[in-house]
Image 1 (spheres, rainbow over the protein chains, first blue to last red):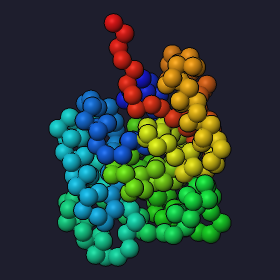
Image 2 (cartoon, chains in turn red, cyan; image 1 turned 120 degrees about the vertical axis):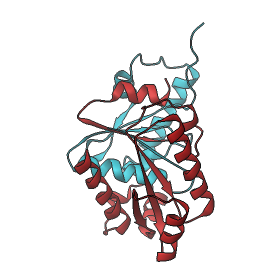
Image 3 (tube, rainbow over the protein chains, first blue to last red; image 1 turned 45 degrees about the horizontal axis):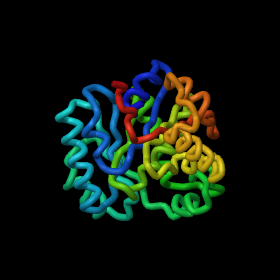
Image 4 (cartoon, rainbow over the protein chains, first blue to last red; image 1 turned 90 degrees about the horizontal axis):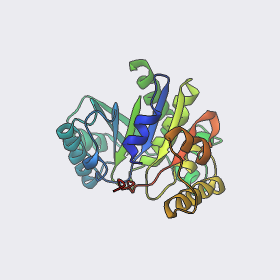
Length: 137
Length: 103
C-alpha cells in the first residue's frame, strides 16, 4: 500500500493524519493530485535544505498534490538565519522554530521533547503552529 | 486533514512531526501519525520510547518479508500493527516500497 493509498483510507472529518515522509522529494514525485491537504516543508538555515524545499514546492505545484504548503524554518539561531530562509523561499506561509538544545538532548535519550522536564522554546513554537492549524481547519 | 511533513534529511522533520502530532492531540484532535521514513524514528519523537519503536520497526520488517500476513485495509493495519503513543496519538510504520500490482 502506498503512503497516499494509506492516507486516503484513513482520512475522515474528525481525524488529523500526519505523515513523516522519506527524506528528500522522491515520494512527492510519485504522488497524485489532491492526495494531501497540507505539506509542511521543513528547512534549516542551510542552502541545501532550502533547495530541497524549493524543488519540493515545485513538484507539489506541478502535480497539484496539496492546496497549501507551509515552510517550517527549524533550528533558527538569529535574524540572519530567518532572512536566509525568507530570501530563498518567498512565502507568507512561514513558521519558525528556534534552535533548542533540549530537542537534541531528548532525542539522544530516546524520548520526546514534549516530555522534557524543563520548558522548551522549540516545543512551544510547534504548539503555536498546531493551534494555528486547528483554527484554520 | 492529511498533512505530510517533508524536507531534506537532518532538518528535524521527524521531531517536528512528533511534537506536532502530540500538540494536535492535546488540542483535542484524533491524530494518526504515519512513519514513512526508511529510518523510522517517529516513535521516539512521539514519546513511545526506544524499545517500542524498535518493536514497530521489527513488525514492519516482518510484513515486508512476508513472514507476517498483510492487513487488508489501512484501519486493520493500524489496529494490528500500530501502537498508541502518549496523548492518544496512534502510530504506524509503513514501507516505502509500493506493493506491486498483481498480474
